[in-house]
Image 1: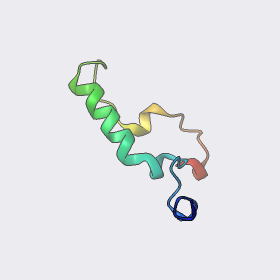
Image 2 (image 1 turned 60 degrees about the horizontal axis):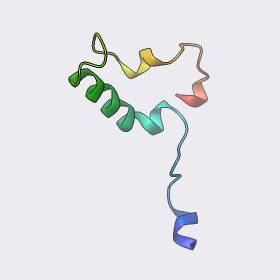
Image 3 (image 1 turned 90 degrees about the horizontal axis):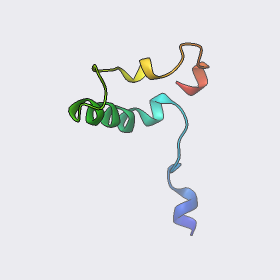
Image 4 (image 1 turned 135 degrees about the vertical axis):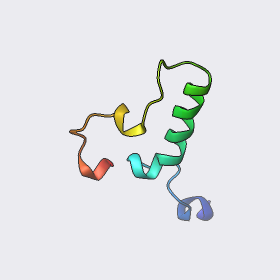
Length: 54
């Protein structure tokens, strides 16, 4: 249990912390033709998103 408490956050917040996973999701959606055009991760979220979440 101690190892789990000292490990990295399993559910991190923010774009930066989740960049790798979000890039993979966007790429997979594009490859599977689930989206009409390639999209950047930044375009998925409002530009008014607080800096602390980026």
